[in-house]
Length: 375
Image 1 (tube, rainbow, N blue to C red):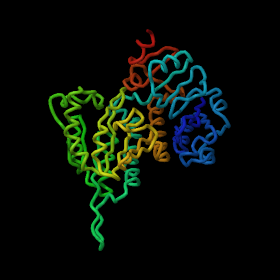
Image 2 (image 1 turned 180 degrees about the vertical axis):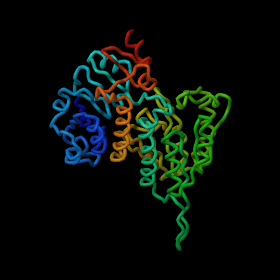
Image 3 (image 1 turned 45 degrees about the vertical axis):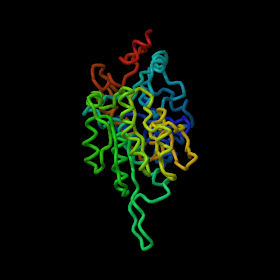
Image 4 (image 1 turned 60 degrees about the horizontal axis):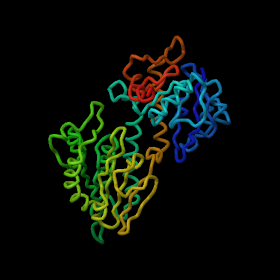
């Protein structure tokens, strides 16, 4: 059985869906692993390392896909896939994409829809990538900030520690807090979810935020933040506005599953910040948490505030991101691997399979998209 690993074609995507480490383990399952040449170069993984791990190198996506029963991808492939193939990747799934996969006869699994349950932690691509995004956001903030993060005492005087404010304390936010603390910053953070307050404090940061009855129910069963009322966000903004004016660095990480990212930093808040301050918007892929974010760009305001709105933050640390992502996909496949048949066996009754499977046997099966596709 052939498993294809393609070179990513989306502009700016530097990750790869398999590494030489995981290729060895895939080959041990009895798979013929075929890798498109150059697939791992942007992640620091030369073709020779894939060949040494047992992969077959081919010159094009079409050659890799010829006869492939399984396809590993970071993003949805642009090349047409063989009918009956199992596609596993972060597919940015919606009803239209699900219907297209069904028509093409591809069994698609969108890993970004993985349920957040204990069994699935080791295959949770969102968590592994968000962790790295939070780390990278602080490193890039430190590089853009024109003073030091820690307090620096010299014979010429003292440079005060940077005030760092993290907005959103999910996986990315918590890693941002931890990284900023390691660099010596004075860190505070906010999140609408009630459980986040203690997590923020446990990392040594101070909590900032508005709390009421609505905020007590601000978390879904899957651990994501819920969309709250305009009134709540207005009150939260009042509390946050005064705090932001005193900050040197603001890290924005707040996302709401399936929706545009909420605007948490207004134009007026940006205007209140000191010249030389830095805003890093990890949520830029979903529209951004800052009103002045331009996805994919670095913006410098008229009074000198830098807004880093880069997209694909995990792709800015590609070697580590690819290593973790590849292990996530390997774990998913091996969890549902039939050793006797030497083939994947995705039980449609399994909670994990129900969470990620978009299509099966030419039909849309995911509960989020099946009704819309049928309509």
